[in-house]
Image (cartoon, rainbow, N blue to C red; front, side):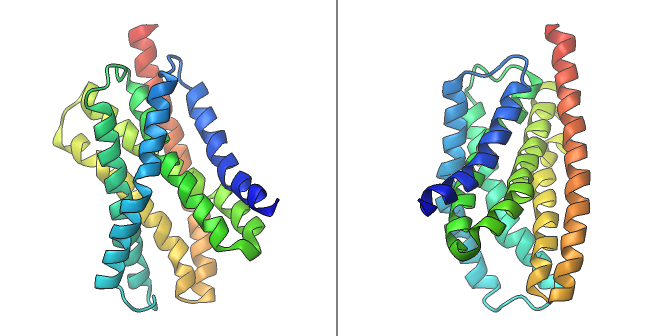
Length: 234
């Protein structure tokens, strides 16, 4: 019974955000394409774990003791391989997708990929902290899962902006750099806890502030693409 509750606690936040972004789309994507996007996100969890393990062993074999080390691990062990593989999955999904024809579509598909990844990551985290899965589940439902959602919004926003609006180098680079930087900052504050309890508390406060601002930014980016689609499709 406990295992079922853990799985539900891990997946319900993901399901809620998937439903939210789906219902936000005035012209919903085919369910088959959305399932494909989600399972692309699930599929990259294994290569991401392998790459993270290699980088960790090669460059960060000892425990984190400084803020610089926390930031370096956040950006290069976690954010770099995870967002890089999400972008690869998104590109594979959209490069010959005839249904990718609206600005908001990029956000939808990117969020589904990102939350597919988050779903498996969340299950593994909760089973990894089985003695405190309730507390971990609540924290991740409020922070980590919405974090992956926001990273997906950023990637999808700039993907569509580059594809439909302006094929500038700035927009092209932002497809990866925006979620990479946001993910790196998020994990940097989260990893402050590995330095000391005091820095862990400071990092948690900064993380909350950062998440609030990031989600406001993402909400506005969603609105801008919805507005573009409304002007075109009515």
